[in-house]
Image (cartoon, rainbow, N blue to C red; front, side):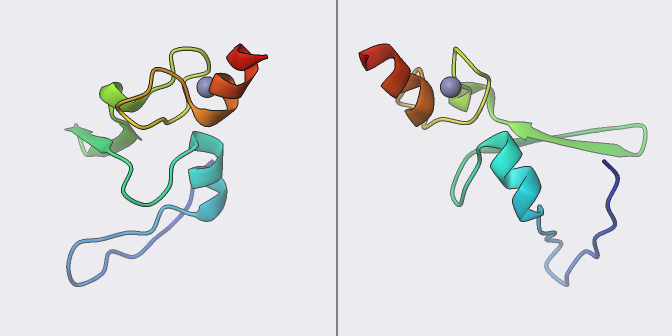
Length: 73
Ligand SMILES: [Zn+2]
């Protein structure tokens, strides 16, 4: 997927809703930015990755809400 976004005056960009949903991220989630050879990669911070599915979860939990529910059953 390739998208074009304009940087605002404060250096911010918006991650489109469909990508946020796909990643399982929402406001205040911790992300990592890696920059190499002119490319910026935005990923879920390693402290906040669900051990089962790789989607975002709060750093105090091992699993995202969906996987946590599956385990309880
Ligand atoms: Zn999960």
